[in-house]
Length: 330
Image (cartoon, rainbow, N blue to C red; front, side):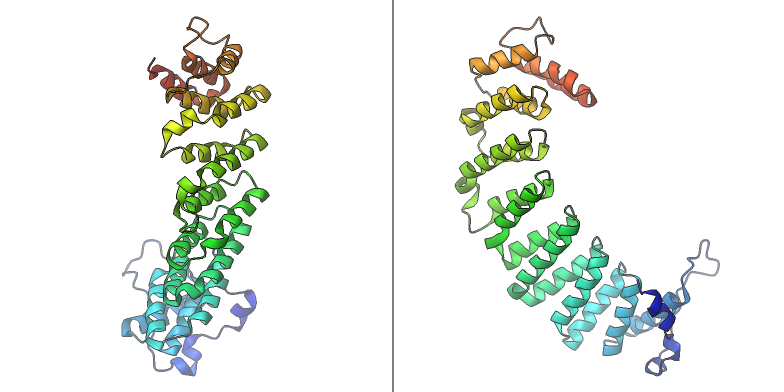
């Protein structure tokens, strides 16, 4: 929005010689508007003249300047953005200058769909040369709002269309070093290892990523994000989840230190249901913690014991754990 100083200095378009030949087009709200919007006189003035140039399809420098004034007052108006793109194409305007304008606008309106759509349009026209600047800009936005969906979506689009993969894994690592709970950074990391043309895909990164994730889980077992990430790493190869010796060892280490870790019990339940043959340590750990739950169940019925324990530990989702228990195949 314009500052108070710019509002005081505003000169109505009808008083500007440049617009003397244009007849403004008021908004048509019908003869009896039920709830008319209380527009400011400044906003009404700008929009009335915008409608005039829009109806006339005037693709001129002054029309471009008018769209700037209009967008500063309402950056969410998609019709203005659409018309601005028509004017820019017709005038072959400086796209770098346009990028500076939209970036400044986006800093104050970082969750505005129309602004991000316009940025994508600009990036497409500028090509690969825009990749670094766009990555720097989304980095700036994410430093202030780590979960900004628009910034993440734009960043992924730029990576796929214009490049910049070489530094992206390091960027994800940096974000996770700053905040290991940043689930958006975990999501981006998975996107990079599965989509980057430089890393060889998940099969090439799988072993090191499992180690990376286990380290993150041990750092804070009650952080759900790395547990979900670990499941994702095994999604395409569920057999390896059962045979990988790191998994039961991880679960034992966690449950010995934090026997009420819901995420560890949930993960153990999942791998048991997928066919993991538990060793004696796991059997004893489950029996020891669940001796008050399902005391009548057999020693081999570990999933039932775990579900009952989770009903007790996680009362918010008690109905879910009861449903899981009722659907176990013994």
